[in-house]
Image (cartoon, rainbow, N blue to C red; front, side, top):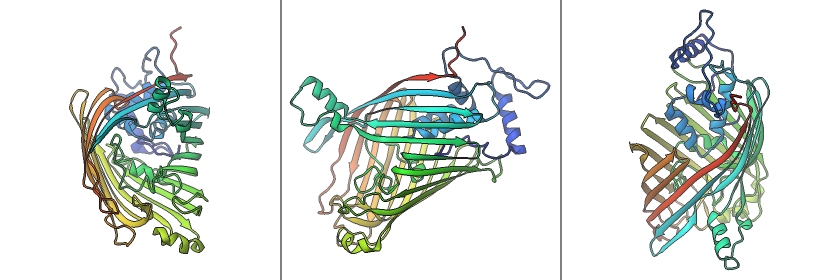
Amino acid sequence: MVMGSAASNRRSQPTIAGCATALLLIASLPGNACAQDGEPEAVPLEAGKPVADQVLERQLDDQEVRELEASEDPEQLEDEKREIQRQDKVIPTPPLRELEAYASARLRYRAQSDTARWEDGGSRAGGKLNWEVIDGTFFHGRAEFGFNLQTGFENLTSPGEVTDDFEDTVFKRLLYLGMDTPYGAALFGKNWSPYYTVAEYTDRFVDTGGSASGAYNAGTDGGPTGTGRADEALQTHFSINFLPGRVFKPFRLDLQVQNHNVIPFGGGARYGVALGMSAEIATVNDFRFGVAYNRATIDPEDLPELGAIGITGDAEALLLGTRAFGELWYAGINLSYLKNHMTTDEGNYFDGWGAEVYGHYQLRDRVWLITGGNMLNPEDSPLTGDYRVLYGVIGVRYTFDGFHRMVYANYKLDDSRNADGSRGANVLTVGLRWEFGRHWSQHQFDPD
């Protein structure tokens, strides 16, 4: 798997500290004890529930599962499942072979200035595959497409009166295939980038945020330059055990390469080779520090023409981040420096630095307070005018099943500026997110 995991501790030979940690974990499970020969006792299975999910829940704290599921990048959770499958098993399991079809319906009501309307909030549907071809080696993939749920409703209720067809609003979000082995992983297609591994620390607002990290640049999903959902990317992932196992999890390194993607607003010009990387250090209690860097090269012969929109060289993005969480809270911060990467509202590129902060806290059962903000300041340029990003967010969520099924309200206090000096508008957003799906697995326990 390209995206790393909190439990990636078996990429190399077991250490004394790793074995001791495993024994302590086994001994701490309710109703379990080590037999005289040192082998763990089998844990009873729950009928009608995939064994892979049971192992995940028993080896990770509730808050670890919660934050993995809250991530916009679904491969972080899948990587956990595969890595746990490779580990010494508290629950003996057959090969992990699973298929899943899923959908997430997302609607929101947004009110700002003199306008208020219902909108789609990023609805999506897709399918995934995990197939353990041999012990510890997995073939996996995912296809996920976004769609406009509001347009679909309007076409059903008022046929012929809607300007956009439902089919025209369907777009590719993720589409990739990969191989994950005990020694590393490789993947090709459209997937969340290594850069996003760090950007994800703070990209957790609903219907806002992500303006300062550089993940989503130049009015795109970060696909052309490779900082968000990278287009046609070859990615590799490695976890290396060289840090003290009692304190740190394995060092994580992700690499990515792309080639010949179109430059947004570039009049048909294309990037050359684009390279991305991220590196993470995490403690056993999942405090993380990460650094990410992405560079998309530009042919010097194109620079005279591209200079009209502010591009003076290769597109570069550097990101430093850290995050931590506990039973009732989560906090993350990212700092970025961006060159020829971000654009103003008029489509002109600039160099600048940014910061994003995000946090949530559980006020009571099912009720979460959300807060944070974004700041992005361009360096002096005649093409940027008064452009800047500066806003804070405060919100509340009521969850029915983690952050998969919830209602929420956000208020965005906006002091941003467009290039012409006009001010951004404060925005109230109220919405619903509801996920559902169907799962097929060889691990499904059948008492008959």
